Image 1 (tube, helix red, strand yellow):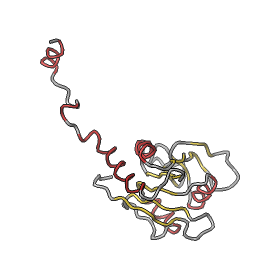
Image 2 (tube, rainbow, N blue to C red):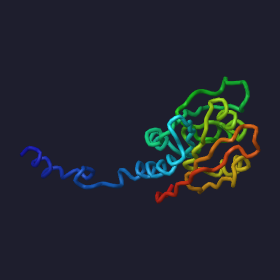
Image 3 (cartoon, rainbow, N blue to C red):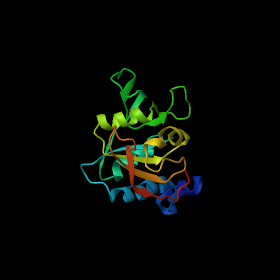
Image 4 (spheres, helix red, strand yellow):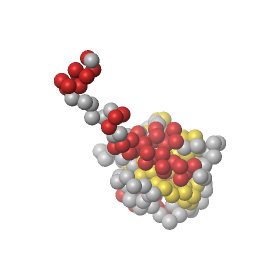
Length: 181
């Protein structure tokens, strides 16, 4: 009786299970659908680095749960792919940028195509999942990817062929999405 009295006084909560609020789970469902496409290629011992430009780690954490492979942590700070690790620190995920002067994203890692391939090799990563790309990835990283990159491309899983290869990444799975990014 008290609960009904509160509902009569304050109204029924809008986001309860009784409202079937699908919009609350749109992002989660999108990542799950994309991961299903990637899991057709991935196996349990595989290691994957997830890049989702502009993410606040939400998509990264969902992928960590949904992918059958091990999602590898990224890094923060600045690293040029050399032996100087003084400005690089471990991080869960990473948004790739040209310099730390950028204010485009909250969590940034200054990264070039060379430092990305060096990081992939150092951490023995098998695959790179680009969940969301942007203009920086399209402009600076395309030459290392078979078929190039586009800022508005669908989520694509790439096999890492090696740091010394001119085309370091070859596509192995693509997942279209109905969610506007």
